[in-house]
Length: 363
Image (cartoon, rainbow, N blue to C red; front, top):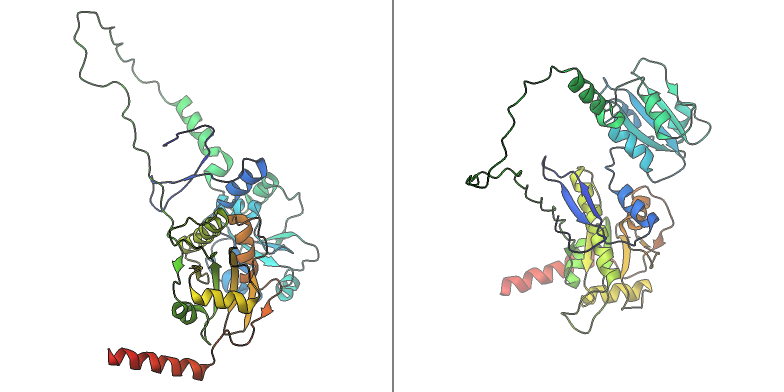
């Protein structure tokens, strides 16, 4: 595993190909909370976040499967519901609905939150879970409607053990005689061949907007939708290493983007913007982010005219950043109006494009 010092913590998660897991060195704080948060974040998310607009469409998919819906006041998906979705993957489809989705809440008669309901089939009566919100009792409740994956209950291991116990014993193999001093050593190696260490899958870095023109065309054009920008600090030396806050911000967003791509989920693009980019400097000034030595994460939507700043300068870890990203995806939290002049109007954009095209024609 390439361990060079102790203690070392490695996180191993399934890769895209069987037998090729992703191996990641834990680089976070050595506290129980930080380690738990990091491990919990690696639980795959197979929970559909449904709204009044798309709940019926989701219910119409895989009609042969039971459906479980968690009604909650929270915007984030808890580790418990994600774990249950993994346990019943392919057997029960799991969704989460916010309490503000009034039509869905009223449809299923939910009056208290959180609430878990199961729709066994399209023509069956809805079942409300009334037990403790703990994994084992919920697992048993859901088990009435479909069988969980064997690994979720340990039945596979016990069944395997029982089958081995009942199996007919094999014929006794002749014992190997101990080698004498005069006997030549065998060329065969009795030790099992060591398996090669699986290389971790590399996470693609964020795309970089190195120039003011690329920043404008990607995120500041009149029709540009939501972008997330990591505004990197300005450095006097082009080869200087970025501070840890900047590298943490970049790696967190790169991993979030990568996770969404593996699930086939659509996520607004995220970009790295170097401090030497004059467009970044102008954007900082316009938004009141005058400290050019700090790293800033912002979300910006030029078409709708709003922006939002990531406010936790002490924590650029993936858990905190993804919570902020999820809030934006769900339309939660306050947004600020973009100041005038950041987004060019359509006529000005067309004029600048014509000038650029003319320059290219001259070349």
